[in-house]
Length: 383
Image 1 (cartoon, rainbow, N blue to C red):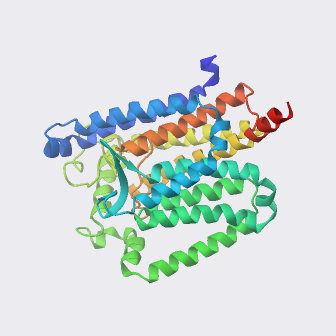
Image 2: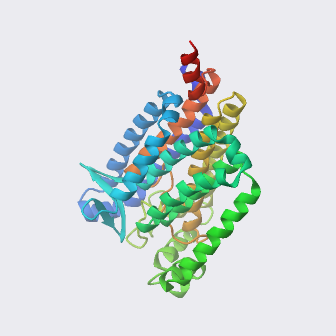
Image 3: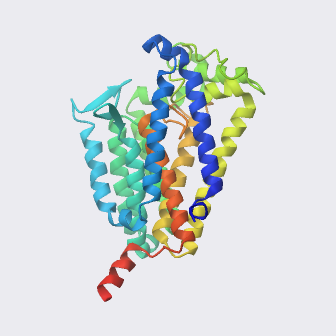
């Protein structure tokens, strides 16, 4: 019963990515950890704890009925705004590397952008069920949920967290498109977004430099282009087969955030092109299974589950793509982690929980428990 309720290929791939991530966190952080803490496996030990907490969160999501989350959409939206506002209050939000993104809860710091993406996906999935006709037929139906997303993205930009803002908007647009919104509405929103980005860029020379600096990082290899040039050196040094696990040179205090945002570069140096292809294939397969789970939920008559599966899959796939693209100099630096692999508690726990939701969607689909929350409420009132 349990095996049939789980999407086994997705589970295997998820565990493979998680395991590879733990190995690379250990490899990429030993030097920094030994220097800063005296324990070479300090970051690995903490990441292992985060992984266990993430697995617990995934099990919780897997064993919780989707109808409960559908009914909680508005409460989760309000809680999301509460977190995004709280982190900006001096004394509550913690600043790291010039960004205020974390709120302390005892021994843990929570990066508010991570639950924001999950809770927004849940809210929007429910909205698309309640307002399906309005979203498909009117500009107002499209504009209202996008306004909700834009407000959240604007609060993320204040931190600033550009990568999470881009991921959130991409997830929202993808969910609306798959939910039946018109293509003309997307064109209008993209046009307005490009105009807003242009205005913001022109208003600040710093933003112009940030947006264009990745095009030629070698022009400033010891200042604005330092992190990217070190990443490119690492990736280029890996060649076909890599220099060997644990043998990276760039992680030895050359490449900042080697165990975090730029873990992919260390992996490329140690495992080479083979390692790069392996990671790309694993994430591609994860995305494929996620969309397949969503399509099966739609066929089974559970639009909330389908919308949520699409949103979670777009989010994880988009974040993985952006992180790898940043490491290779295809996109400007965004400060996004590689899901399930980069060091970080908030990202690990929330990403695992998202995968738990995907498994729950699969479970309710195969077990035939796909009655939407509103349908169940109407049925109870009728009886």
